[in-house]
Image (tube, rainbow, N blue to C red; front, side, top):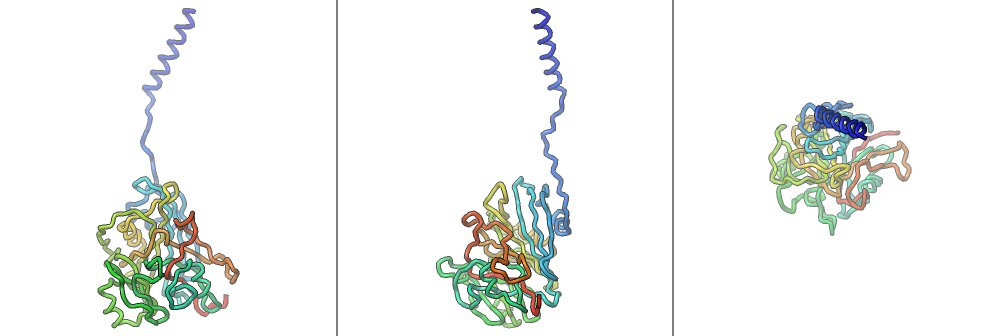
Length: 314
């Protein structure tokens, strides 16, 4: 009996000494390893990404590529973002304003349905995203709307707002509400949607008073007005994606190569879709992000931007 007790004490002492000598590393070792050129830009030029879980780029059509990335942020949050890079130097590619039923009237309709009314041979829709904030009872957008050179609406309802636009020379631009009348008078604006606050000016991040974290949609433009960067950020789901602050959007757009940028409608309106087949079958558009309304169901919105190829026989 004495031998058994002694043996037990020896084992207990050994276990105690072992536990004291073991060095437990409580530090998490994160490493952001990008797999795409876009991922490399975000890792090298932002301070947002702690660890990348997935990073994929795919060609949408000539002059248009999409990147989808899931990562853990430096704040420890799950994140999922979606990016379009649109090269307006590509002759066949253009960006057009969409509205419900393809008409210049105020209403609300999911973006994939708006796209079907603009999708035809010679004017094929390949992708798109939501645009302006709007009255959720009437569908009236809060800012201006121009479609195919027609000024459907030319006023802002209120607040610190702006526009995203394309000219007849296929040059993209961002302007504030105070700049809009001057721009409208000086340039032949073909496509215009309203937006929220400006995010970037001459490559510099604009400080924001709004520090909320939300799902977001925003657009950035290169200094030469030929490259458009679209960023959609999912949110309101901590295990999947949390969302971003406005200044974080600006940081991402700047890292991609944008000189100017503007915030668009977000929250449940954020929509990022692509064409899934070259034919004109009924369900030819797929929403790649996760809209927060009703567990991923598209919200009906007032307007958006579709990315098209012109004179395409495909």
